[in-house]
Image (cartoon, rainbow, N blue to C red; front, side):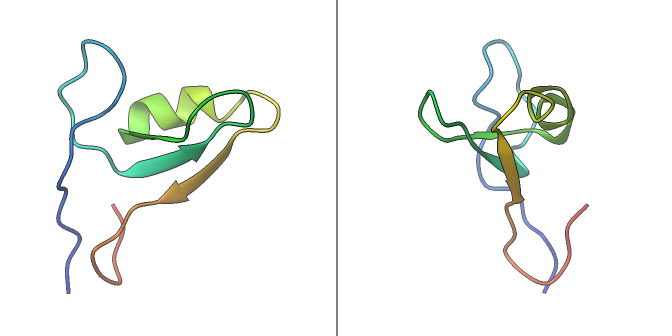
Length: 58
């Protein structure tokens, strides 16, 4: 089964599909696009998990 994006990135002003769930110790977890995830995961303590609806992830 292929990956099917189902939600929009949680970052303000971004209309890309969310592909990653960020676990942020000092805030609520949120689903973001791959571009925002690459930047935000650089902060200490932030963990990224891919969102999938199957076996593949872009």
